[in-house]
Length: 324
Image (cartoon, rainbow, N blue to C red; front, side):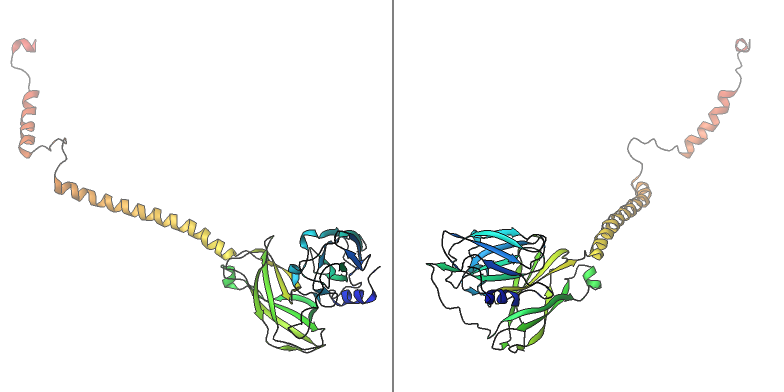
């Protein structure tokens, strides 16, 4: 038996803003036992979108999956790709989730902008317990597309931590006000899992009212590349926003100049040291005397003897036989 109108309305209430045809998910039977299967169908999704289908406990189409992914039978989930019109049809095995029912078949996009919808499914023979009380006194949902505000400065260009402000508008669809909600903000790089941190927001969102939420986002120093900023509240993902962080080219330029300047400075220091040693060498040689093996310079007495003997050796011989 297909899901009732209330289930479709609950899915539409939690659909993302700006969607003309809100995503809807339906099941072929309202009740099935573990070991069987149900046919899950849907419409109103993005064309050629990859979806995940999984059975979750402690959930309903209005409040969603209260305990997050820990309440779902993730190992027995299935994936499906929507057609050109945003519809799909897929067989899903029925298994008992790790927590008691009420149970739902939870459909969500695996890539791209976040969208999700639930359809009620009673798992025969599985324990049923009342849903936990909403400790926040209400239920927040995203009303307008979130955005990152801010820009890089000179320090960021030289490797300082990139910072932004995540701005979003939420509405309280519950019957009680939400006072001082605590959000979970996560940042992930590439295919790595997000690193989560709790961020409290001071204020009150009255029942049926809206509020503008601003939360600071900061990455590690020197971070660059493709990042994703995620925001959770009550175990549900409200925001998944991409962030293309530029490379700190100033830091790259600094190391490039360092690689050129330092070797040049060392080379000039070595040349200066060699020149200094060359200037000191003649004075040292004069003070220490001639080196071993170097012929001694002729004394003035020897130079005079050489000048006297030379003319005598050049005179003609007095022997008559020699003249002949």
